[in-house]
Length: 213
Image (cartoon, rainbow, N blue to C red):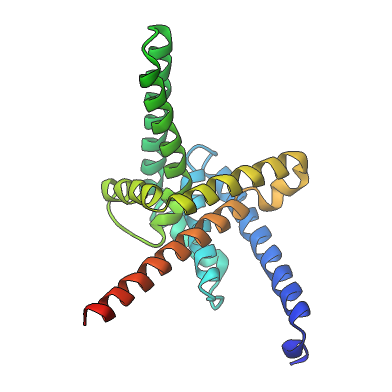
């Protein structure tokens, strides 16, 4: 092929493919979020988008994006909404707890603990649905796994937080990107970091097994 000996052109070609992919799946995400009246559509739409992007990262493009998106959206509609509901409830509890501490002038220690728990919860909220695509377990186990991932992979968690914040800032200054990459760009980063962390852990475990043998 013409591109075989053109590494720069190969990279540009792959970049254009990923741009079109992320724009396409982001459009589906917005449509299906609206179909669920926003509040009930964002969870299943995000999970469906995560599954599609995960398969693309695994270099699997032999599937119908629309068909997979619809199937995942329908199959996990209630479970993904339950996950989102629990996230919202925990958020409300943390906000209430912080306001209660402020009003009653509790020592700084309690504020620091609440803020730390809030940061942990934000990171869990960012990864929990994408993580579910790589680890289909019960909801309680999913929350435990998400917390362990955030704590066990601090560098990956920091990268995810910084990258997500950066993408949000960029899109706020360039609102035209919101329509095409508002959700897909962030999910792409999150899934990529999750996969790399899990692959590294697997390699370390395999290396340990070889040494033990």
